[in-house]
Structure formats: structure tokens, C-alpha cells
Length: 138
Image 1 (spheres, one colour):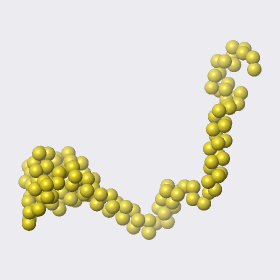
Image 2: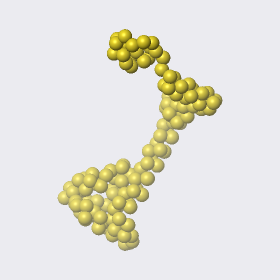
Image 3: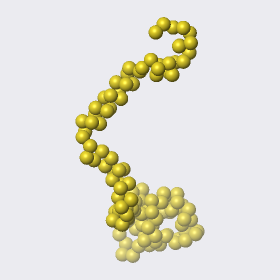
Image 4: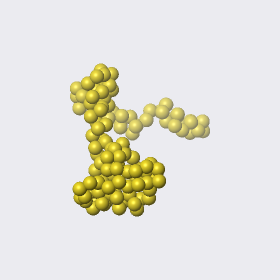
């Protein structure tokens, strides 16, 4: 890796290693970075290989995006510490069945399956109203 990272001069702005990593952490797609800087994918690929020890643009963006995902997760945890409402929402989202007996949900699933397999006469009439009008025997 060079001692000093190089700058990619684009039509709209210069791309530094710091700016590239910021855009990657913001989950920007390659096309968005190209448009933001005003350069071609070929030039950006060559710039990445020069600045990141011959690693490709795809490899580097994949790694740098993880930084952004971690930052999002950290921000979420910071918000959780400050808001009981968010704690409740996240608890319900990630732990909806916490404290419930697993046997109860299994039993409910079995009952739902049985109900679907053996519909009542009224449910059959709703599904097939024309069959009831033809005078078919019950």
C-alpha cells in the first residue's frame, strides 16, 4: 500500500480514501459513488486496487459496508437506552414469544391445521356457493 493514499479526481469532486469509506459505510452502491464523484467504474476500480493493496472495488465496498451496519446497530442500541417505547417495540419484534410455553404455540398450530383440513359446512358454502344452489344433497 502506498505511504499516502492517492486522490481520484472526478468531474464533480475529488474522492479521498476517507470519503470513499464514508460513502461505503452509508451503504452507497457503486453507481451512486460513481455519480457522486463523476468518474467511471474502471477508474474507481483502478483507484481501489492502488489504495487498498490490490483489493477490488467489490471486496472493499463489501468490507466497508459492514462498518456502516455496525454503526447503525450501535445507534439503535443508544436509542434503546433512551426510550422505553423503542425497547418495547424491539422486544416485541425480536422476542414475541418470550415467556410463552412452546407447547401452547405448537398446539395452536396443530388446531389451525386440523381446522384447515376439515372445514365446516358453512365454510364450504362460503367457498362454493354455487354447489349449495344446485340442490345437492347434504
